[in-house]
Image (cartoon, rainbow, N blue to C red; front, side, top):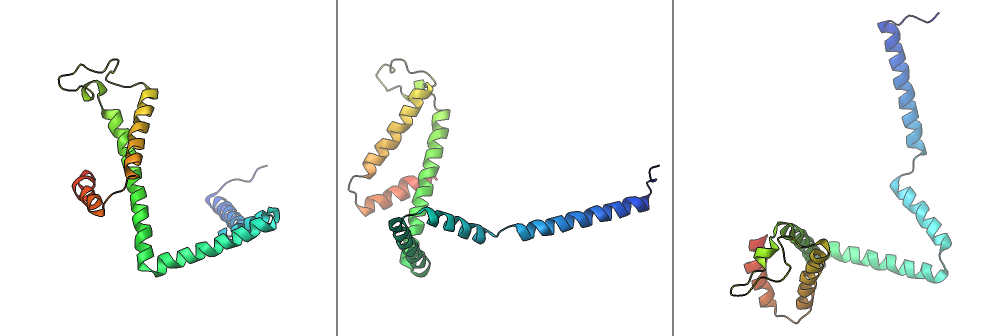
Length: 168
């Protein structure tokens, strides 16, 4: 015959279950490795598979990475330079996002109509996916080609002040 459930027996069962779970969690934590231990273990695995030449190259890269880290943290000029690089990459990502949004909102039939000229043949309100992808590539590549051209710093600053900051 089964034991009758009472609030007291339920409470005891709950306490036993909680104690068992707590003990299990503690055992799990003891078995788990810290992120640093996992990284060390993975590094040892990789090093076992590396040639001496690869190990030498990896050691050199680690040393260079440590030097770079100390320069960025300890020398304001390097810190500012890397922060500027980061900001320019983030700005580029913002521009790509905006290009996606802008292309989605554009009525290409209206947008490509030039005053005094007939509309481009076959251009509708929306572009087929293939043409839309090509359009984005043309816009991005034209900016990349222009960015590779020599420039004067005052023109860069003027563009940032007059175009980039107002747009942002």
